[in-house]
Length: 393
Ligand SMILES: NC(=O)C1=CN([C@@H]2O[C@H](COP(=O)(O)OP(=O)(O)OC[C@H]3O[C@@H](n4cnc5c(N)ncnc54)[C@H](O)[C@@H]3O)[C@@H](O)[C@H]2O)C=CC1
Image (tube, rainbow, N blue to C red):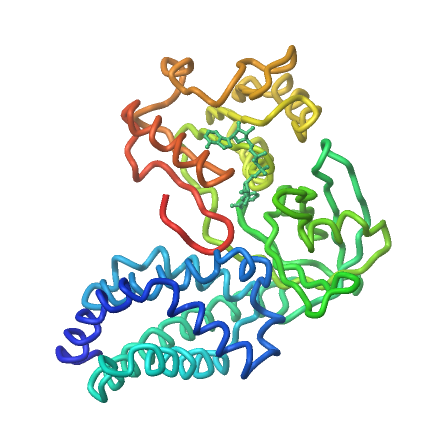
């Protein structure tokens, strides 16, 4: 438990953090990587280049300091971080390293305000946060280790199928080289994949949503070849791999999952945000036939529409499934032209009782969430995750 004095001091430093802005986290990462370059194998260096990681860490620090007397507020955000940490194989020994660089950063940047009392309070506060994370992550690692087909650390997988889904998205089926079972996962979860692209200085770890229902034999991911603003290091490398190539995986993780409820479900995606929706949809279709499912999807055009054959087939086979598509550029194969506009479906959506799951670009989810709230959907019935460093919608 933190003392009242520590709580008071840490809260009083929130304006200091706000004033310093991402200068704190820029300095922190430079310090961390110059002393511990091996950690570049864990952090997404592309997010470092864009400043997204710095922004996320700064927000997380400010949120922690702000809510230090009521950590329950941060429960969901922390759970998301803990899941992500396990897909990066963050271990207890990493926490003191990060803590030392954080304190060192604050000392160097704001020496006058960072008095001995403030330093003591931040050390204590960081220690408590680290303990919470280490405990939660230990439970997640134990789950991955102790269940049938589970493992910890990396495991070798082979690409046993490669299937083009649309202009930029290709699916990869990944089967363990040891021929044994793989741990099951909840629809919506992702796996961590570790690769060393040709010419790259460091190993890179990325998370990709699993795009099929759990089957205990293999995992399927569907990867968009990122081209803008510059070619994605890992996505382009994966697209260059052929059947038979090997990659290393960390076990499934993630808390954006389909809840086991009998209510109508509305799955809403944009672009490659389709991937977790495919796992959710396949799972729902294999369950209770009386559960109404709506699948709403937005993309640029027909060429960028993945899984269209599968969706057409499933919609024809399952009367409980209704699908609606929006193509920004229009065309004969879509139901609506332009961005997703839910007012056209107002009468057919389960506004009061449905569970709504969103996945796609953050700006798309903010736009759709706003529409759902305007239509009267309770915010507690709207579920989504921001892929990459955490940010609020
Ligand atoms: N598990 C997860 O959380 C996953 C998340 N994603 C995220 O999904 C996103 C998909 O990206 P892309 O395929 O590149 O999408 P994109 O940039 O091609 O956009 C797809 C569609 O989203 C809609 N859209 C985009 N911006 C919008 C806005 N501001 N307002 C309204 N509608 C908008 C448009 O209809 C557009 O055609 C990525 O940001 C990725 O991080 C992807 C896979 C899994």
